[in-house]
Amino acid sequence: MSKGAILIARNNGRLDYVKQAVFLAKRITHYLDIPVSVITDSEDYLKNSFDYTVFDQIISIPWTEVKNNRIFFDGSLAHKTAPFKNDIRDQVYDLSPYDETLLLDTDYIISNDLFKSCFELTNNLMMFKESYDVAKSRNEKEFKYISDYSVDFYWATVVFFRKSPEVQTFFNLVKHVKDEWNHYRRVYQIGSSLFRNDFAFSIAAHIMNGFDKGSFVGTLPGKHYYTIDKDILWQMKDDSMLFLVEKKDYLGEYLPILTKGQSVHVMNKFSLERVINEEENE
Amino acid sequence: MSKGIVVLAQNTWEDDYVTQASLLAMSVAVTNPDIPVSIVTNDEVPKSYEKYFDQIIPIPFDDDASEESWKVSNRWKLYYATPYDETVVMDSDMLVLQDISSWWDFLKDYELFFTSNVYTYRNELVNSDYYRKVFTANNLPNLYAGFHYFKKCKFAQEFYTWLELVMNNWELFYGLYAKEEYPGRVSVDVSAAIVSKILDCNETITNNKVKFPSFTHMKSKIQCWEEPKPSWQDCVGTYINKDCEVKIGNHKQSGIFHYTENTFVTDEILERYRNKLNV
Image (tube, rainbow over the protein chains, first blue to last red):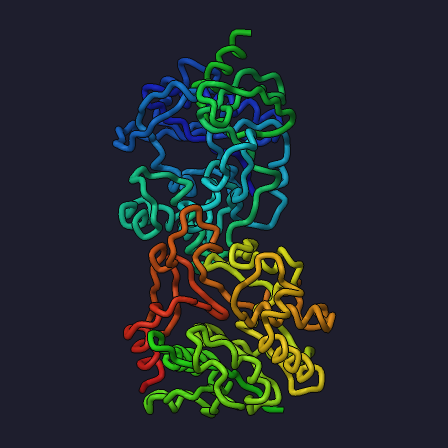
């Protein structure tokens, strides 16, 4: 069985996902020792600007405009609005060249080898459901359910899947939810019209579980730690990351928190890029 | 050994508990056709509902709740009213949504059993004591009489004799055992918990390690919602298909569903069950 990681890199004029993907690919190679492929609409940019040999395969997709705009914060006081190009995650099942695939967001910073064991486990589909805010002091219920009255929240940030008929059905269902988003967001009591893969994957998981809790989606090894985009990644050295996390009820003030040996979902992509730039300049 | 479900139903001037009990009996007929249901009531059971009941039993020893709007004072009499050797007592505002025959197999090892864990509509264990402060504050066992089981036996009779005593003298007993967060009115759950404490029998009458027998408890403030409304029906919808499968919001329900709000019983739901039962 072939195995590898897949990253998606589609730049939106504000954020350089290609740069993030190159950076993460190196870390995946270092910590997980598996080949990494990238799905991108910017192959020329990748080949001309970076060491693209970090990738096993470059899977090129056409450049498209999307109307799914969202606000990206850079700490608690600054933000920019940009297109949210998140509409091909459901196609990864077909696009992946591997029998066993670890699909990661480019802002999920791998800092240990825990995901190696994904390939040893028997679950054909694994995601994170539980999650832990590095700041600890904020309301984590936002990521417990997709809305107050609705179903369990699954993170589409990291998805392990083994090609199999039931996983293919799952991805087809995610696509259907995406295609009929305005219907599903109302049925699942989601206030915002913004399409999010986390929501689509959560709804598909709920349906595959027979509209109940269930075990169709297994749990990834380790714990899913995250920082929100109102926090700032300040420094990174090997497996250590220094964050400035937003102080609760004190706008614009931060607390320093250091992580070591812990993979973290860094939602402030602007600060991630600054750190990557610093690393490249060293 | 005979076995069956018994439900006490007493209409008030505003709520029709006999219809609720009839809906419960219909739900049992759909999912557990071999389990008889008897109703204990002094109210008239409409002819069209009579067929769902094994027996219609008058409340024994007169109606102690005739002057009450919260009619629970007769609950202790169910031990004497039941026609069965093994009885499951249920609240009238419940639906049975699955085959519960394996629950009887589990219960036969007990002389008396109370549910002590209940679940939200999302199938999560209820941890909130929002409606049960009196239990927490007085260290009372967390028993739910809404679903309980007994065998006709010496121990169950003793328990029910004490339950009669506590319910008929609740002001005295609550003052002794439920001083903190004093309930202010008689409650079967609190009374059963006090009897359990008096007889020191909690370990033998419940089991909080098992997921079933239990029920989904729909009181609004225990659903893990950040913004609950007074009525859970204003937060999530109810959907019932022609096979009488129930979804609350997007969650398919199973086991026993305790809807708690009288407005849940609509003509549409009654019609669904009538159609399913071909009547």
